[in-house]
Length: 435
Image 1 (cartoon, rainbow, N blue to C red):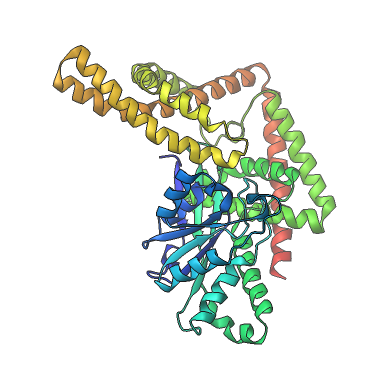
Image 2: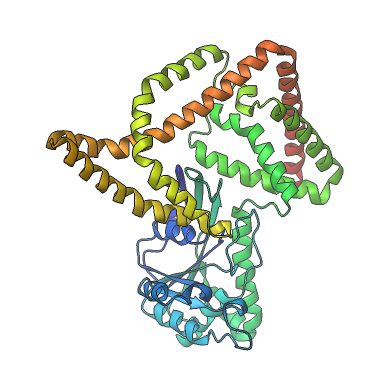
């Protein structure tokens, strides 16, 4: 429910049994392990930073859920030394029982389009386990790439890519020859696999350019019949765009600067009159904009009673959940906190509302109908909100088109010019990538 779309790639790569280590990037704190574990058949243990174990009640719950702490310098008191060997031993014991556990080798969770330095701990645990078992347990490391359209936004999208497992046995000879070299080789392999599957924009400027170019491209996967799985196409195109942008920024700075200036100038003009890309391209409404506007208006009128019921019955639990989710300073904690609080509060309010309704009206059948309607109307509120936003944007667009049709046509011409520039850049990047 929290995510509008979850695209899963490589599900066939997930081993049915352990011992297995899952190594994933970590942009979204508690949501990352929940999403991955939902698609793994066997019970999954977790490695997590020791800071969250300071609360005794939370620590007890985490231990029950097979969460093993790893303490960093900032997780311990000044003057103390982090001794993680006993926790490494716990993971080895867990693997000996053909277990599967998850580790986030970046070490911390940050919501950004970047893969941070991969720590060597994952490889060290793997080789320690294999060495103690004389390399006869068949341990594997499976990397998992998580790509969010917006990690902290409700009803956003996520793509999970399960890569083919890395066979640690293949590094046995190298480990016996030089253990540190083997650790670095496996760590490098993990980093390469994750980098290949992730959207990476290592500066705010590149991230802003990536988001804008993706908006320009958005209508293609709405119209192109090849893109039947549009959510998957959207994520894959974003990954490809991020790599192309990085290439141009590093090797063709003049071309990169030209693209950036064109895109920024175009968006500044479009945003100054609050016109969105799908309206300029005609991807959603085509030439029947006025007809679509009327349809939106009628849908809003007819749906208003259902929206009102859904709004009244959900406004308090949703508002409280949103308020609590904004308490943490780190935005990476907001999505899991919002989902957790809402998952508790909404059913609680359902119970109270159904109880109150039955007390007031004293009619069992009507109470049952009211109870069934609650989640339906709650979902309808979000749909109604989407229609209302689209209605407002389309109304604004038609108003501008009537007042200054030349301005809209100029935007369309600029957009086509940018698309042509991007196509030429794409061809150049493809040629370079093949070399």
